[in-house]
Amino acid sequence: MPENHVDHHRGVVQRTERISRHMVRLVVGGDGLSGFSTNGYTDHYVKLVFPYEGVDYPRPFSMKICRETMPRQLWPRLRTYTVRAWDPDALELTLDFVVHGDEGLAGPWAAQAAPGDEVIMLGPGGGYAPDPRADWHLLVGDESALPAIAASLEALPEDALAHVFVEVDSPEDELKLETSADARITWLYRGDRPVGEKLVAAVRALGFPEGDVHAFVHGEAGFVKELRRFLRLERGIGLDRLSISGYWRAGVDDEAWRAVKRDWNRQVEAEEAAAIAS
Image (cartoon, rainbow, N blue to C red; front, side, top):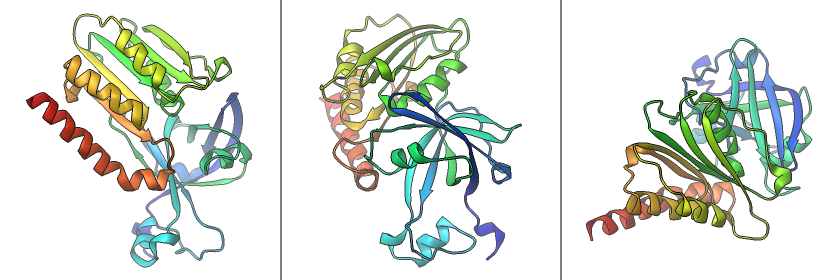
């Protein structure tokens, strides 16, 4: 098969670490990452490829060829994860995984991963980095957004002001966040409340500083939708100053969410446009 059909990166797990009660860190490396590169975003992501056992996939492997030649139900499953860090000199990629027991696909895999395990991934993609020209920054998310929030805090200049809200299950899920900026970090503990409920309340209660804000709001789609409506309609923040997306949706797996996410976003945009016009 022609080399130009190789549309992925192959890495090897170098080391693993449980960095909080529900988060596992994998460092992936090896010569297979020699073509991997990033371009300054703090929300870079890769799509991890999980082939089904017992299925004969193209050799060399290619997602493009899989999609062109195989029934959809046999396509490898994909799971999206933020690049926590990339070291091009060492060829080491750091990925953090939320793990809740046997729930899901990538989390249990990461919890059992060991040095030497192979990782196939697509990407990277990305589109956000904190604008150093902004007067202040708003960073909001649940556990799924924590790697991007951590990377964004590290990228902020010393004179930057940031209000940061992170919702996790309990204090045991907190991580040490490094930044040289003036970052006002608030950890919210979910307990038995719906995901994002406390984030919405906290952002609504924030006394917004004067000036231009650059905002990053990511996580479960339900609370993201609520905060988008608040920030756009009540606070008047333009879409060009707002990175906002539902990484996942409570009650559905990743395949089901990706199948409806485009229509979901269109509906949100339509509701927003109607509200602005009224």
